[in-house]
Image (cartoon, rainbow, N blue to C red; front, side, top):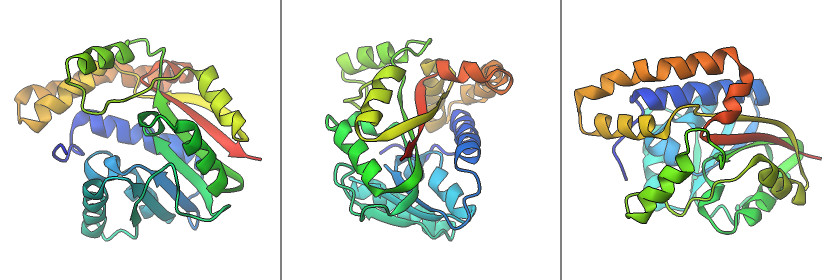
Length: 244
């Protein structure tokens, strides 16, 4: 697993966008029971579940990797968090039906072939009228990140393969087959993929060029903050779905 990348400029950009997304679509988190699938963010990246914990949510997270779950747990202990961490498979979520007010998963379900089973599990553990925020790589990212990923994977340089990208219509059909109704569509990370990859490369190696990242990100921040529709063009396709 890579070193902690929370302080990297592109990670902070990602984190702030996640926080805005959650505030807008989940609202007041106090007392809400939330499940997050995948703990890579809590182990080395945005710590978004830790943030939800600080907002007063009753937070649960799960990951199939023992190392990832352990690092997420250690980070929670350092920050005196109350996160409940489990090592488990997202294709078989170890909770009863109708357990959670919210489920959050960002860049996770696309890494397993049985992603439809994962969606069924999300629907099962959500309470009636519960909401899920689900993000996957956007097939039509204007900066062609799926193509970049395919090229890197071809040469054995992409660490997170397999990774399936999806279009909005495809993701909507998958969710509706599991009785999850899409309420809203948006996106995250309106930036060229190479900026994120270069930032993490420079940051983890202590190369001073990382200081240029905020300047490179600035125009994309302006687009996202001024024009909501531009978010749909980014790397991550995000939908908010509700259990009826």
